[in-house]
Length: 305
Image (spheres, rainbow, N blue to C red):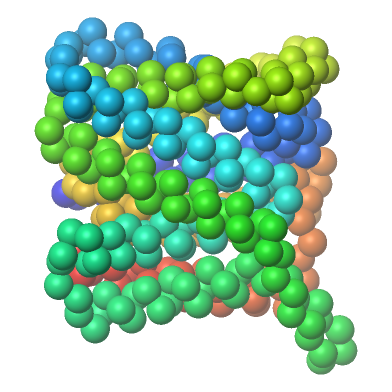
């Protein structure tokens, strides 16, 4: 259990770094989330050789489940990229990470039939409150504040969180029934097939091919390097799930928000060309309070499970 949690912490730090790079690329070098998501799925096929290191054919039903998990994960990433395109990274990622464990918990209670207790309900309240607070755009001038929620970004983040929760639920079952390496490799095939599905629509094909022609060699190197780094983090997260549980690993995602928040603050002031978000004392206080609420919720879930 401790090994799984340690692996998850490292993975979340790497994820925070790759999220910063994703936002940078979506802002300039690769402005199309569809194109970015497509190449993430296509590059997933390079994990397939892992299946031969510990070969196991899971059977037709489990193989379909593996493919479905990879497919769902790819579209969770796509919605995250769309949300990042519309909103700030330090808002979007905490919304996704705050809602995903809540949805997993609801599955555990409503569908799986696990017992409800006061601590779990309290944790959900903190997670929802923190997610709503961090998604608000609040203009603060001379003691007055105006609240405004970006519904488009919030909606995209919610769909991403929903699909991410489905993915964690699926891989929990997958790793319980299959060996880790072949199961992980088969899920990557599912993401690859999902990427090919993008090409079935003419609008997507035109956008992917047009954007690809405009991508500079330097940007291509950054994309590939970032996806390799993201792939390492993804393998680590799946390994952590295999060593513990999907809900437990997802509950630790509050660490990613903390890493992300600190990185964004430093980069916004030191390297604004990489990422630039507006900060003032009021905004920092708002986000810090939201992260604190989410952190309490995640901690309570961690203690419960």
